[in-house]
Length: 169
Image (tube, rainbow, N blue to C red):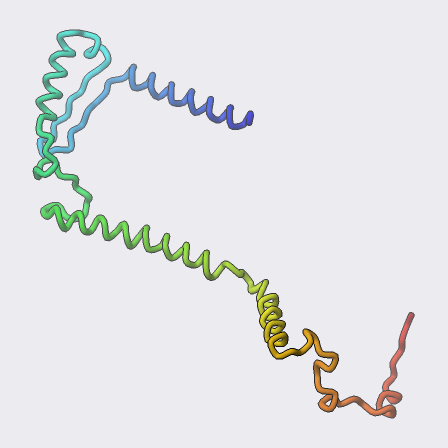
């Protein structure tokens, strides 16, 4: 909790510092319209009544056209300068192919392939399937003759005695 409070107070101090920096230095509003104009002002301009009124008039005149459908105010995505529809299509298709598809693929891999990472629980599933199968046939879970005794080939007594076996206890 103390770490959280220290971090939030540090962030608060940084925000206050940024606010003071903006208040002390000049502020520049840059327009993204075709006019390529910008309006600069300082805190002193805001404090002076006549300069503030003049600044207000300039800002109102600069931002009076608020129609988003006009070509002057269109949002340029950086793909096609002359055709707004193609520009928007390329922007959205790049979002789909670079962010949405990898995210969906990552979720699918996480849910399906990594659900049993390393096949650590396959033996539990196999055991349950085998138990259900043997119960449906009326057999015991484990048969005492799991391997047919007629198929097991054991060495004779002479072969066992011929081997040199040392048992150390």
